[in-house]
Length: 317
Image (cartoon, rainbow, N blue to C red):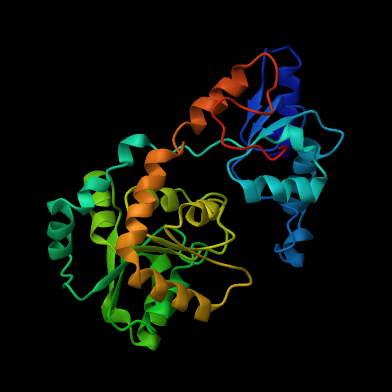
């Protein structure tokens, strides 16, 4: 990254109308930012002392610091606020673009059509089973262990794990945890899910459980909401605010409590049908789909706009 930054400066010295990077590189015109600050307090001290961390933190400061001119496109409010707090970045340089959900993935009618019943039957779910859905490739970061632990509090729940199979190396600690908690038989490992299979699995589930430890955005949260799947998530997910705004689920505050997660899941399970309708309405009435178009317009604009056309909000507002 340090070498790339040097090469970038040398290459752009020739002159370009606009330079855009996807990692912090000083002197770029625009940074499309998909990460959280390297300087956040949760990073262990031993990592902060490493040469790698010092270099990455220096590159970050060269983009977000007060003296920098780079304009930053952020994806979620907590992300933008964290960078502003860490570097005293002028808020006008950090507009917040709306989400970028593929509108073609909004198909809530699958919950009321035969898709839901067919998929539940294929998964072996009975009418009394409450199906939780978890999706991810990073079990620890996305809080799969937390969801597994919560199963012990809900004997009629089944956990559908998307993105991983039981043979994956990353799944082994979770399997041991599930066995110790006596819930191993109530977990189904579905592997990679895409297209119609993913949409039908969302339709078959009764809630998305996404208790992530870190998540800049959490696109799966919005995909669930707009398809009528209630959500239980944690407040450190960037898109958790949409769960609160829609009313289509519950957000567990930090510091995390396993009891609070289990209680939130129970509450959502009792109101799943009404929460489903709230999520569908939220997806129909709000712009959750145009973020990439707005980012492209912003990159190409001759003059920086802090209030972007179509943007639901900006940090500077």
